[in-house]
Structures are given as structure tokens and as C-alpha cells.
Amino acid sequence: MSQPYNRVFNFSAGPCTLPVEVLKVARDGLMNWNGTGMSVMELSHRSSHFEGILADTEAAFRRVFHVPSNYKVVFLQGGASLQNTMIPMNLRGEGRTAAYVVTGTWGKKSYQDAKIGGATHLAFDGKEHGYSNVPDLGSLDYGDNPSYIHWTSNETIQGVEFQGDATLPALSVCDMSSNILSRPCDVSKYGLIYAGAQKNMGPSGVAVVVIREDLLPEMNQGLPPMLDYRTQVENGSMYNTPPCWGIYMCGLNYQWVERQGGLEAMQTRNREKAQVLYDAIDQSGGFYRGHADKACRSIMNVTFTLADASLTDAFVQGAEAEKLDGLKGHRSVGGVRASIYNAFPNEGCETLAAYMKSFAASNG
Image (cartoon, rainbow, N blue to C red; front, side):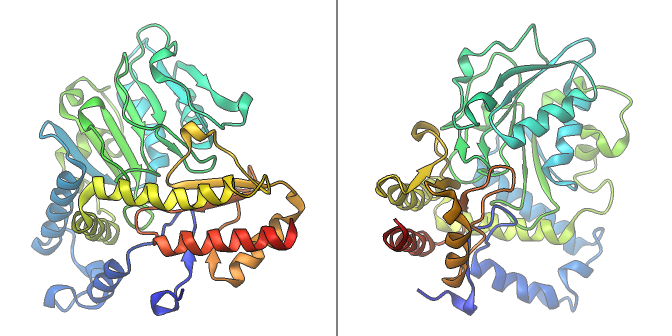
């Protein structure tokens, strides 16, 4: 099935595929936004035009993500990786530890970054089983009175996902970069949520941070202003020049999610898309093998290997010839990864499943 504008089916883990209708609106805004005679990228961030874009973007995010009124929302630069530094700097109390749950590559990176600045407790590490599963968060030992517990709701590289929100014995801090807006979320169970935009919300270069406002007065003092959440909140995401284009694109995507029916509709769509691929894996007679345990399979990142690993390159190259792009697994784990974020069309999953069946028949 052909894509509009001769586009490929983009299975890349990020930057992600974006809705065509959003790209069309952005195309017009790129040249002349709302009759101003200027591109969104040319608008002064102190102008009423951009202030309106920022306000509309935050309002749309609050609506679609159901953010309670006692939470602050800021749009920051540096992607999710900068949050690995900001979180412990702001939230780890003097003489206390920060607890980390490591279920894959990004959780491990968060943990390693946190260790640089102070005491850090490793509550779980799934390395022994190749990061193929996730633990029961309620059963872990988080150490003695941690300042917060950090976990990653979906691991992009390994394709494992927690199947819902969690009630934790300490402040819950969650990296939702690769599954935010893919399903409903009870924000009230978290102290801080953060996510890079380039998986489900927009282009790279923006991170969204949701912070319960009662935490702000208790955060550590004397931090560099750019790394202090209070400074960012007090200045409404504009302590310095913000990533204006990225924020604008996020706003368009939030509005698109609303038009699709919100997070409940997104969850239904995403489950259906993922099931098409997991069925192709499970019904292949062992030709394909899923990486994640079935109980914690991601609906965003479908990861698998071929029983004969020597066929992987041929599989990926053949897929590219069919306009199925970005399927090569991360260099650290190999295999194949199909990332199917919110805007990824169901037709792409059906096309890949058909290709998988054909490839197995020819090479099995």
C-alpha cells in the first residue's frame, strides 16, 4: 500500500514518524504562520505570537494528558538525557539516596548518571535476563528512606514495558519518553514525569517535564539556574530562548491526539497495531523470536531476532526495498526493532507482517 507523498513506513525508534496532517499544517507555518509574514522559527519568543503558541501547547498537553492543577508543566531543552542530571541535583536530599529500577538501556543510563552526584541505590537490574522482563515494583527493596524512586515505563531498545501506573513507597519519578500519550496515565501517582518529544510528541530537542508543585520549595538550593526546576517553572519555560519550533510541533501533535479520541483511543489503536506484529512473531514457528517476555511486551517498540542471525541483514535490506525503513535493531542488542508510535499507521504493521511471512517462507 502506497503512502501519501511517496513516504516510507518509518519504523525508526526516534525521531518518530509524525502525522501527515500535522506535517502539512507545520509546512504552512514554516513559511508564513497565521498571516504574520514570518515562519514560526522566526517569531520572537517574547512576542505575543509565540507566547500564544506556548500557552496553547501547554493547555493542549494538560487536556490530553489529564494533568491535575497542582502540577507544573515545563518544556526544556537537552532532551530526556539532561533530566538524568537535573533530577538528582534537584530531588536527592542531603544525606539521602536515590533509588533506581533498571529494566534496559535507558534506565541504566539514568542510574549511571545519577551515581556521579551522590548516593544511589540499585533496586533492580534486569541485566541477568537480558532485560527481557520488568519486576513487580511493589516487591522491591528501595533502601532506607530514598528521596525518590526512578523507573522507565518503556524501554525503547529492549521493547519491555510496564503495563500501567504504580503506587510506590517513595516519590515516583518516571521516564516516559517512549510511551507517553500512548495510553491513559494517572498523573497523580507521580512526583515527576519527563519525556523526550521525539518518540510520540514531535521533533527532537524538547523535553516535557511534569512536576508536582509542592516539591518545588523542598528542592535543593544553590543550583545553576538552567538546571534548577524552580527557575524553569518561575519563568514559564522561557528562562532562556526555548526550542520554539519543537514546542509548536508538540502542540500540533497534542491537538491531533485529541482529534483521534484521546489517550483511550490511542491505547486501543496501539494495542491493535502491536498485536499484528506479535502475531507474526508467535505464528512463525520459531523463525522469529520476540525479545520481551509476553507479559511485558511493549506496544511501542516490537523487538525480535531471527532464529538464524545470519539472515538479519538480508531481512532488513529486503524490508527497505519494500519501503519498510528503520528496522535494524539497536547496535547494542542487534536483531530487529519495529517502533510503532502513535502516528505510525496500521497499514505499516500489516505490510511488515506480510513481509515477515514471505521472508520466512523463502528462507525458513
